[in-house]
Length: 260
Image (cartoon, rainbow, N blue to C red; front, side, top):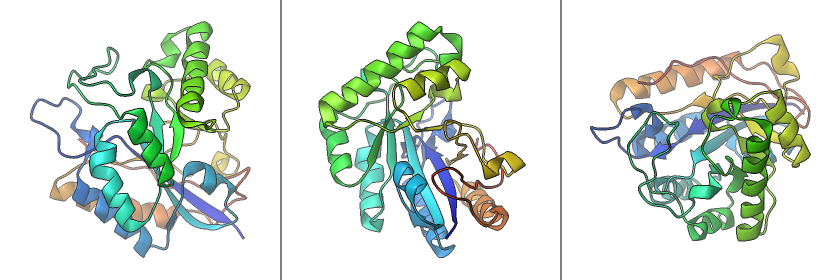
């Protein structure tokens, strides 16, 4: 049996304050509920990234959350628990448990609270996969291999130390990486890595690089965001070619519009 995987990328769940510069990082609880119900209506079942890549077949949706915002626990987790579905969380381990965090390279000066290890552990107990988003929120493409290697290694060590698990998946901060980054991930035992590139069908999608998995980035709160979510999801489902062998191949969907 063959499988189609649609990977969705999210950050914060809630409503952006007026002073937020990157408002598309926020997904309202209502839009998240809508997206889940729509995908289920289209015949998708939800899995973590690692489980999806090992699944024998069918239509599979993967919800991924980058950075480890505290609202992933307070706002997203109750919704996913209600629907009885897991997600994959990529954490910046150097900022776990911190409050009012601002990353120098983010282009956003809105302070954010980050999940504690206790919260992350609870999400893991509820079936969430915990992946690495590096130890520091930096553009890997702007740093040398020594800096990249340490950011990956320390992150993996912190997850293992605090949760007793070794992460298999990784999300590139800012979607920034190069060939050296991928080589370092392989050396550290990372099997799957997601980018911020929009999904799109190409001939290469039949046998993709598992360290360059593309995602449909989700965000928004207003009526037109619901319309966009509906249209892009229908288009994605229609454009998915009938499958690929999971452990070595995946099928990804059509491009989506940027959410402002």
